[in-house]
Amino acid sequence: MLGPVILAASRSDRIRRLISAAPVTKQVVDRFIPGERVDDIVPVVRELTGRGLDVTMDVVGEDITRPEQAAAARDAYLELIDRLKELELGERAEMSVKLSLFGQALDGGHDLALANVRPVVEAAAEIGTTVTLDAEDHTTLDSMFAIHDELRRDFPQTGCVIQAYLFRTEADARRLAENGSRVRLVKGAYKEPADVAFQQKAEIDKAYVRVLKILMDGEGYPMIGSHDPRLISIAQELAHRAGRKLDEYEFQMLYGIRGDEHLRLAAEGHRMRVYTAYGTDWYGYFMRRLAEKPANLRFFLRAMVSK
Ligand code: FAD
Image (cartoon, rainbow, N blue to C red):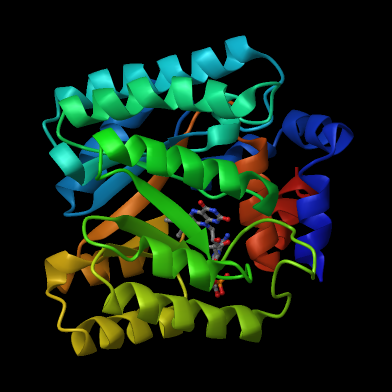
């Protein structure tokens, strides 16, 4: 029940100001977003990869209003990629990108987002890695998939995300499960209406398994983005049944969530990639993490009142 309320609050400027100004917020935010500047994040990448984990890096931010902000986001990614070069991690450190941060919602946004993301994909390819396009709310997805298709002409390894809660996703998965594609499957983190998305957890979980089966039986590279222990063991079983080797799929989890599980899967020989977000515009990302688990909100509120 609380999740949709928090997701609605994530779009409110008034609540954004209140939460951002609260003195305890920073300490709770740090659990999910381990830095604001590129200098903070490079040591985090070093530490995670030193423990046998791979990373996908996200510069946080989404609701921009001016093209200059999109250009600044592009430059932040370029700076990050430049810094990652010295670590020589290749595809062990890839990027995750939200096209809204690159201007997708502005006037002429589709072309603007494509123009901003292309140099990031090019720079990533130069250091032997790649970019995955995150999935945002359902109204943005046709544009995201069109940009994905366009980028894949020159950079076939460019990945994208599909969300199990959307009715459209089985069809998207069938289209995407082709040789050379990289597709991250997640449950979905936005507040979506009942005419486009399943609303009940049980229905979303069932849809997740159906879509995962399509990806595992297909010819692409599935990336299982979930912390759900049941889905993780189903994924292992489906991979086994499809005859996939350990390097023919991977698990992905968010920084700060079920860290022991990251290490357990890596120790079992799985490729485990940690989605690591950083930057100053953390509000939307942080609120989605609160919405996913009521205990996070309780922890946050307790920290507020105990100050
Ligand atoms: P759940 O059933 O929500 O959680 C399973 C268990 O995981 C919970 O019981 C709890 O123990 C733990 N857990 C889950 N979330 C939290 C949390 N916030 N805090 C503490 N514990 C938690 N969504 C999109 O819409 N678009 C994207 O591009 C996208 N990219 C993602 C990338 C990665 C690598 C991951 C892991 C998730 C991404 N998501 C994205 C978010 C996703 O859609 C879900 O909202 C989120 O993963 C929670 O679903 P779950 O599969 O972990 O299952």
